[in-house]
Length: 269
Image (cartoon, rainbow, N blue to C red; front, side, top):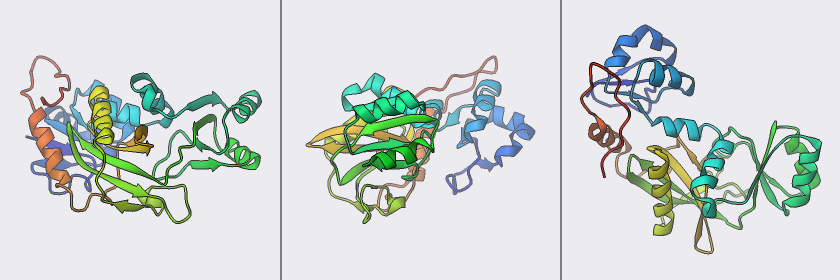
């Protein structure tokens, strides 16, 4: 199995792997065409690799496309699991839309920037001043109902397998559960209703490398988002992430047809 990686840290120790800098990819087109898998390219490389060079990429194209923008991600969740998606309003940032959302969404509510991670770009709106400050920082209004939780659950999925699921308790300053923002890892058992939802979403959407964040309200799960490039802070003591990825890649490696491109195929369950 011949691999090409554009992320030396996430593929450290992978066998038979050539590491390239993203900006060098046009200098290695033949190598990329012949590789069984191209690992962790930058988002801006995706069209050239998938459609131009017919590469099989990991994470999957769906992981990139859906995970690139929170608004698009939420719309996908609303399509396939509306009953598990928090009430969300998405509008252009105009005066009428600002007033309409302010008059519709009960306080407090959550406002987000479309592209952010590690808890950045997320605000708890508790006053008109909070709302005005948020509106000045975004081109699109993206708000969700506030869920009464003091923790959420991260479910890490590789391929068709749950690598780890753990609770993230609230940071000392409140609101944020992200470990990067001061949240703490809690290894208490995670209810199957949460892991089942994450795995169903991953399978249905073709997402094969993600950390799903799910809230549990009175025993009912709500999907908040997933991160294609999730942090490893909560993975200590879990099965080796590297081995989970390699097992998936080995299972999905198929002989290449010299007469034409091979579409990406999921691992058989």
